[in-house]
Length: 259
Image 1 (cartoon, rainbow, N blue to C red):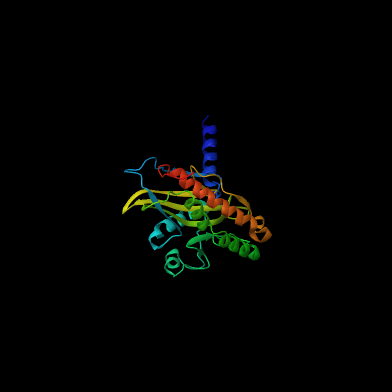
Image 2 (image 1 turned 60 degrees about the horizontal axis):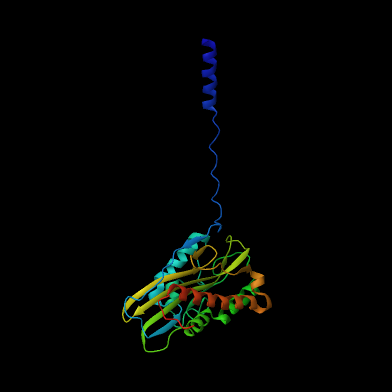
């Protein structure tokens, strides 16, 4: 028994002297966008006072006062996709201070998201140019303004509905390395009566972060969006303007929308 115990102790000693080296930790996996982050929404079912006779409409891109919303959007994109939104070498603050906005990344006041803006590798330059032109031509801001103006009550404006389109364009559906892209829209809704803010909420239509009342975005390969001089992408942007307007109406049932 004593010999057997000594033999076991000797084996244990050998094992302790020749331990396997610790395993090298694996590098972190590239971020993927499998899970959808659902964003709760607010609605305005009733006015805090008498319903206004008329409502002024302001649909625009971000201004200097909206810089915090732009930075928040960029941080959310970086967290969910692993990539920061580029602005062709200038920061969002600098772009917003340039008169007329930065023409390479901001059009009609809104930040346009393109494959190069989100740092996708292997972007085909000609397709990218077609995509940028298509997004500018579609003018999602003007499409949203037209759709909402047709439904707002006429009369003496005492209340203002402001839709701030912070950004729209193409973002990755699954990862930051090629593949399918989706047309995303990020906007803020603000309703004011005089100097009082009555309502404020955000709209997210994206593959990785989506408002609870938003439908899935339109998705396709970059070459498909760019086909026929960008016609599929222009059509998708015009449809997105209608969707954004419908979400605004859904969030604000207290507004006396016309049929």
